[in-house]
Length: 331
Length: 276
Image (cartoon, rainbow over the protein chains, first blue to last red):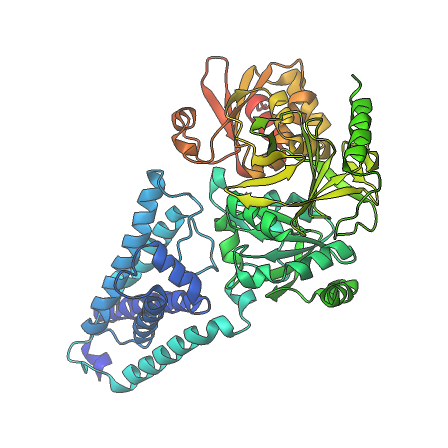
């Protein structure tokens, strides 16, 4: 008979509190999802922020995903007890501390505008300033509201909902653990079929750079692009295959894109003799495009038409290649 | 002396020195290699002495470098994939009108062994001389466009590829306010190599206007701490800073502006029609 005992004002407060908790929970779940489909990018972010002093970054990433899912699902399930709200407030404060620190560093010129802010994984492109203000605008009002209109005397530990939240958390952590092996690259990154290369950008205002500016040659015609780590032995072992494809000249032109320095590119060139063009691409532009290297994609008239995890099937793209590789191997 | 005649003499001499019959290296060249393009990435040193006039070409297709210099008995090809160096017959080196070089089949005169890559340098020996390809030092400080074009042939090639909007150039030429455009660039920066040549075309296209251009090279390491860069808060290159005649900054050419710098200059330097 609760409805008979509470005033319209209390009811409004309760509704505001439920709405705030739901919004905060949903934001935490969305952020956890974006991190769970690419936990290694999140781990890199943790390492970059220097938070992995006592626990390894990959382990910390799984732990953080678990905490976000647990708190997010409890809030969505309307569990607004202090043992949920206080850690949620601490988490929001921690997020704001991180994005605020990046924003401060950016304002004081010690962080580039294109620095990645990790909170939403690689899915959303945000500058340090945007990250701070968006987090503040999304999280703080929702957090404050979620304290309103809490029912006094309610059970401290709603078993069914807590068990459900724990189950969701376990599932989320398990998913994050296997996510790198699942074919989720198109979901987890900004690189997917249909995207125009000039929609892939990094940085803000004056420092904004889009993919087409880094590689204007690919705005027209067909091009095969491979994102690669030039120091990875597995990629180096494939240079013959790539050379055979590039020299075969039958498929789309091959470009290898690297986030490494000029020194890394030069060392790769002189030690391995690539017969394809290598372009240095700013890390801020490159990192949101992959979960694991190498990754490849086909661009036709400035638009991504296919993507591959790993190297592309060269035999499909240029039929002469497989023969050329086999010939080279047997000689 | 006519350079081509000199090269022919060098070639004949080399043929005599290295043996009359051409010797083929382990890597057989099947057909002509026509994509040797002039490269500004490296400088040649022979026995510790810089050879600034050496012509250095790179073929992506063949993964090879070709060096032409009168300091060596014959042209040299570095076959990067095979990690070998070989002397080539100058008579098999054909220069194309666009500046590219074609290496004709059966060009090898003599294998010269292998090269070493260490500390960013490529070292090989030829006729008892120690030859070294070193990454070219960055172009720093204040320059004019011709300096950049002379420093790196890639600037010239990319300039030739760009077509500036003729109508905008005409407007700039006749209506632009007096201004000085200082382009901060890094000769080590691939993005600058791709886009700074666009503004060369603009500069050439508005010759005689009231707009002056200058180019300021920044180092790779500590770029933002360089005094001029720090003074104007330059954090990325290329950045064009446009000043009025009193030295006051009017605006900047940054990021995506570089695709069509003439549009940005028009926005900064041509007064928009007064509202009626």
